[in-house]
Image (cartoon, rainbow, N blue to C red; front, side):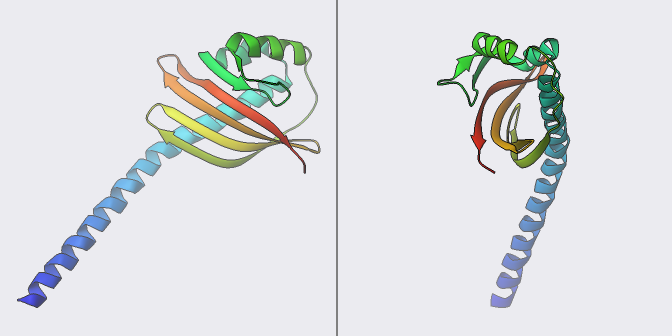
Amino acid sequence: MKKRVLLFILTLFLSLNILQQTTLASDEKTESHIEKEIWALEQAYISYHRDAAHDKVIPMWHERFLGWPDSEPRPADKDGVVRYFKKNSSVPGTWSFKIERTGIRVTGNIAIVHYNLLIGGNKTRVIHTWINEDSGWKILGGMSAKRLM
């Protein structure tokens, strides 16, 4: 009798574990598609900055955006960041860049990304929080901080 109970508990435990792993794998596939979309948006975002493409960068920011550029003393709302961007990115640049991915989490319609942005000999940590609404993915918040190489 004890053997049957132990065998039942072991079978139940293994079945639940397999079910949980199957569910997690299914969720990872869904998020993987979203993660690829977010990383592509980040790549485009930095390219648009380099190209001083104001008409492409500004619509990527959510209306309630709050961000903290590394050279600013405090966070700024969308209007403040638009002024900062237009002032500091008035002409296209010729620099190349690399995004070194360090983390991403997606839950529902929110995604947060962490990465190092490498431009020349400079490395900047970047964090963006994205929100997906009817108009698509928009950057709700962000922060950057320069690092020594």
